[in-house]
Image 1 (cartoon, rainbow, N blue to C red):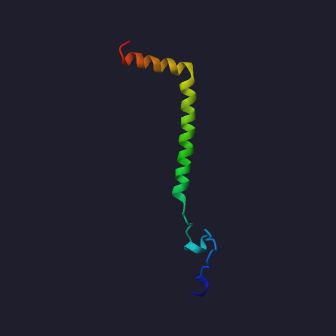
Image 2 (spheres, rainbow, N blue to C red):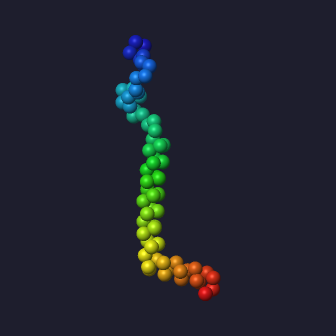
Length: 70
């Protein structure tokens, strides 16, 4: 068709018109992986803060002592 030619080097546009009324989802897996990575890093940061507290250290030490029969 006359209006469907794509020029070399022209960036593709993510529009409803070019996909028949549906939004393109190219790169969504990458975005999801990035979001999960950021969430995991935040969770690890919270755990690091909790483990550094005296109450949690004592609790963990008690669990370890109990496991070894001490």
